[in-house]
Length: 226
Image 1: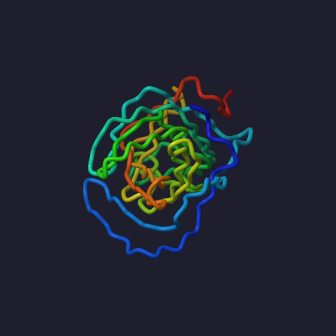
Image 2: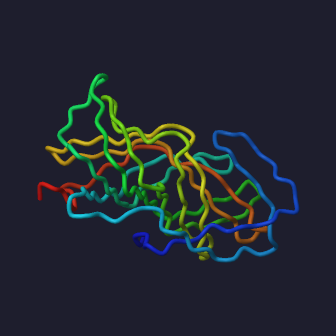
């Protein structure tokens, strides 16, 4: 699994001649019949690199997550990623009466590649899977963790059956970042959309989600205290 690079797979525009139909399941599966072909796509960069005063944390590999896609729920495996953030005061003690703030500059969660069979009986192979939150975002913490709000844009960058792909969606519920600056602990907990286009079925779009908790690797890759 390679780390996502700054040249991303760009969203595509498409005119759809057939009607969209929606299936409401544990996930929402949107089927949009579009062009007769499905060209490779490179995503734009949607986040920011670390400066010397930021924290930078690599995300752990091997943690098990829940993947819901195309009428089925499976296990996905975290395969790294990265967080970059800045704050005026990392030692701020949050509480219901004390709001702490930070700026999220990057959050990329990678998944190990996997195969699945669609409800139509087609085998699809996904690799180089990265869900990236569009930043910067100013996040607040009143004691429960820094909240990434519902409606946050997420870019899915991956290869589908060997072809590069890119799609975007928004989160449908809040997610949480929790830090312990003294011990260099970090967790991300929440649900991120995973959206992509099939290469062999008129560029149909599948929209699912991955949920769970991913922790940071210690020691942090960069800290203002280093």
